[in-house]
Length: 478
Image (cartoon, rainbow, N blue to C red; front, top):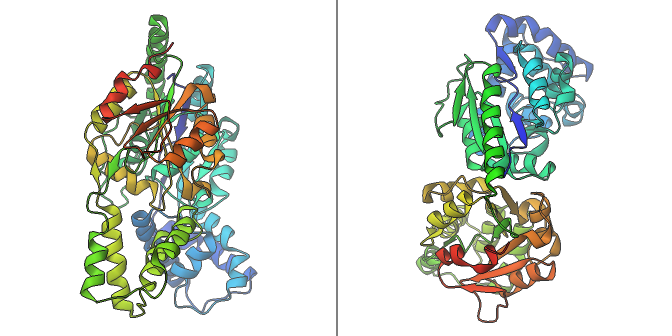
């Protein structure tokens, strides 16, 4: 697929930033005034208030870098900065966003890289679109900063962790940005300064290139996790890289290489890419160890709960807890043990033979590859499994029932998959195993391939080994 878009990180990439104690101490009165405007006052010196704010946000950032969840501003200030301090949530809610904005603009010194406007202009002249994906506490800081620099009009979309709810390197925020443009990630470049956030996230979500730019800022984290495709010292160094990629696209187009009529292949995940050979073993041992007996129709009630979890109505840990309670468990320690057993069952997977090699071969042939998965498991966790299996960077799209709020065989989940990478229905195929899900794909007009399939599955093509995909005639039609 051709190069289409360049996404940028903001802090450390489009701009440099730094801070010191003196800067934060000098700007603390501005945050105090913000608190007082809402009727919240502190019997603290500016030094003490500065420490309270800095330490609280640092504690939050330590948590969110592990969880990859970005909380709403009100929760950041209530749960972390002002933890243990009696304060009105209603009053705080009225200024939470302003506090986040002030923290990010007054507790840091930010400066646009001087070459940024010229580089953005040249990228546009190359015919490429531009967007940003930024981790940020504030909903308004990044747009305001880009506007202040005079470059906001270059960026569409502007994707913020504070709005999306998940942060880099979670692949879901990268896939979300790509879906806004209805483009596959395989036609995109991402430029950022942090390997453990920017490069790792872009690589795992299938970006064509992940480019690291130098930025002298030490946040105390070990900056590892992936290998960038290129390293640059200034944004100007990006232009020849893009020109080279565009020229490669032109040469490839001249040779007429690439997929035929079918351009995209979408896969179910469980029992197609991986399976769980010991599924249920840990929970059965847990039940036997505690001599538990069901106090409800477990199969029926678990099915209802799974539906809620797959749609994102309840999170997966709430799902696990409710399942354990179906056995009459109320003791917190036993509940925790049961949840751990279910987590082990859900996350112990084996990659199906032939999957890594076949997917890489299909990717090399130029197919857009995507996943359509009914799951309560975060995309980040599944991508970890795929990375360990050796194919964590091949997917251009990942459609999750939890993220979409509906599950197969609802038509919208299939339509979202092919439309969001710019394909028509007759240009895509679905690979699945459940009869109902394959039927759902056929009902919207997708061609279908059955693998590890139900006996009553009706598909256009049936394969016995995953590697058989490379010989399917349907994928060779011109």
